[in-house]
Length: 202
Length: 321
Image (cartoon, rainbow over the protein chains, first blue to last red):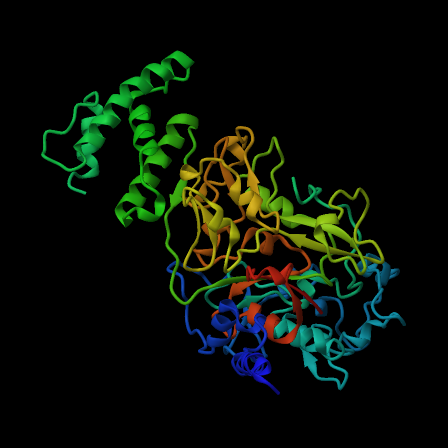
């Protein structure tokens, strides 16, 4: 090792010592996000954010505390179901009753086409039922859906799946599963797009 | 400032006589007045004489106002009031123009779920309506492209698909202004007519834009839109709740862009595109709140941003379920 090697070696060593980890994680934005660990409590913007009508407190926990979901029972056309489904047999004795009352239902949920009672309570028709038989309120259908779709449910509680209602600030109100998905055929239907998009450079 | 705005306006109305008060900018006031007389003659010559002297005076004060960022709270309010009155005089539009400032502890961020979007384009439509975009040129802030699997370049994406969606083996990807934390468009602007607000929204003061389009050239994401012609929005379709930096009427020769619906977001609302999305593919929220939806996405999902290597730090992430 002669004097021509000493300087480059020193330089190289200095560079290695002072080198920082990759630039991406060191960005100002990344630091700002990583630094914001204190939970925000209450409302930030100075505006009236009303808790919308027809919401119920969710029976789930979110890190920020409670949240609300939009109700569903008031949107079900034939609710309460017990108006027809009551009595001993629990089955209305009407000719073609099934066709007349529920003919519009296109059952296409699951590869094996799950029967009604997979989700609906066998005796108490105003409720849904968990796999184990527990009653579930229609407004809290997510408890039922989450039995199988537990990944989606986790994301729904966290916020990566589903929709928040109108406001990003204030009390957290989110849409229930059945607000977007028809429980009888949950896949979104194909339809024409509302408009078109121009190419990016126009 | 040694003379108040009111004094100035009065002196302007007095056919541009310089203010009597000994004042540092009396020369400027004089020049304004002199120009006023000339301007009036010019406007008459063009046949575009404003309907009333009130309209003329308001238009004049608007023309010589400061850059929005240099205005005091009061001056901002004044310009908003003038613009509201002008909208009423010119088109009989009853608009409310907000000058609401950013609040502390808020940094807006956006996430787009590429495995959920079905390409319905309800967002594109909602944005046009909310932000009073030019109907004639069909200006769009938000776009949706149909993409081949493996394709990640939105610049080659197809936004004109004439069939029912979604299509098997295709995915859909949206693009709009990404509100970079280090925005190259802002650096390019020679008149400082565009900047990043405290809450991270990149905005334009339309009245200070000279239409040079440097920002458009500087933006690596095609986030900006230029008004080559006088934008047209029918009065009955106009969104009346507006923000000075947001969806108020723009003119020919001015640059505009997505503002994360500043007139909505500063009121705590979600952006129009987020609200319109029927599949929940759009997530909007506060990056500084560890419990927000957007933070959940960043923490739990596979996310990526476009052209990250440029170091512009866009606040718009794509993610997958």
